[in-house]
Length: 235
Ligand SMILES: Nc1nc2c(ncn2[C@@H]2O[C@H](COP(=O)(O)OP(=O)(O)O)[C@@H](O)[C@H]2O)c(=O)[nH]1
Ligand SMILES: [Mg+2]
Image (cartoon, rainbow, N blue to C red; front, side):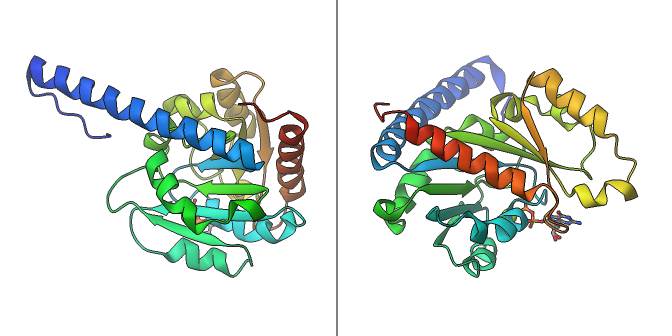
């Protein structure tokens, strides 16, 4: 749904209608997923960022530490099983979704891969979305929280240029904080831009390389899982 065609008024009208229909279908499947996750007590995170912001590396450095939470990962990419292979060494079940060209995950793709995930034995499902700061944002996957990642190397202006993900996220992670001293990185400007788009949003600075901030990220996840457990599941 990312490609836009501007060939005349009628075509554009039809395109909008098809797009709306696809989004409604996605939202319906996502609502079903959300109810099913809630009934089974599974908390779900949807990690969204540009390619290379450090989603997989962050998971590599934190998955093992989430115990005793029982965790599974669904990882989406346009091609290859590379990320799933990287994450399997962390000792948690991982399934790869290959989208074969699609620039985002859709609720149906998650639903189709769920049989690979044993939800009875699960507290937390982490979805690593396809690397893309735009398209994945629009597709509800039935998650409890979207996590927006932006690395210190991407430029402080990205929250202003790509506001939707920062607007919809429940937390933002500034990744690769270890690189900040080597860049013209303006920390205050990045925080200000995130908060212009989403006032009050929690922002955590992390480095998978040095371990900085990983405890806070783990604590944030645990607090979210606990908070959901405290609410009776009647979604
Ligand atoms: N210096 C540094 N490099 C990182 C960090 N996290 C990831 N990287 C590097 O950034 C690149 C992309 O990381 P990856 O996890 O594959 O990004 P993804 O596409 O968002 O999953 C790799 O070369 C990583 O080694 C970090 O905290 N510090
Ligand atoms: Mg990755």
